[in-house]
Length: 247
Image 1 (cartoon, one colour):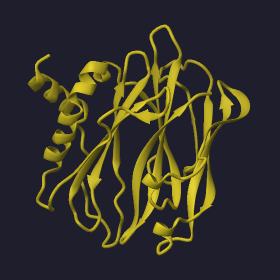
Image 2 (image 1 turned 180 degrees about the vertical axis):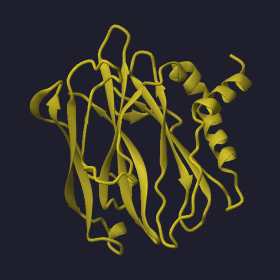
Image 3 (image 1 turned 30 degrees about the vertical axis):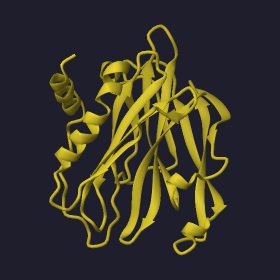
């Protein structure tokens, strides 16, 4: 496949950058999130988060490709890039990360299986529960199937030494299905055993969305998009986790 065509296809698939408006004088940055897609057999999911870093005012783009069978990153990922200064182009940074994962995207056929965003709960949404989402696994009209309800519970953990100057307690989380296809449940589908150092000093989480993919002739793969909040010099920064849901 022509690499120039692939790069153009990737850029088109990940287009739709929301225009930036004026922010308060003191505000952390909340990364935007865009699913890239699934492998045909549903064993791999990739997504991008991007934004402008607080303070330095530099654009960044991070791409994660996850092996859903064991919840680990594929080799050579994540890809994390940041501009050198506030004159760096967001488009150029995003293109560089897309170029670095082009082979994975091509080999795994990720653009052929984009999946569906069946629920989304951004930080800017008013009047919604940040720790619960109810959804059907397919977007269709008439509707197919009964609702699922996913909930997030925050778990307290003593702050490690690296976080002591910012917070005394950090947060982990647990995901539970309280409804599966319309039936009441109380099933834990994910729980932190210990907050990994890669999350820095998390002070809270938001259940931001659910992405699904129907494996041809098989099951529906479900991914929870979880927003992780961290303290910053100008408020709180938000970055994304993709957590496989296995009801």
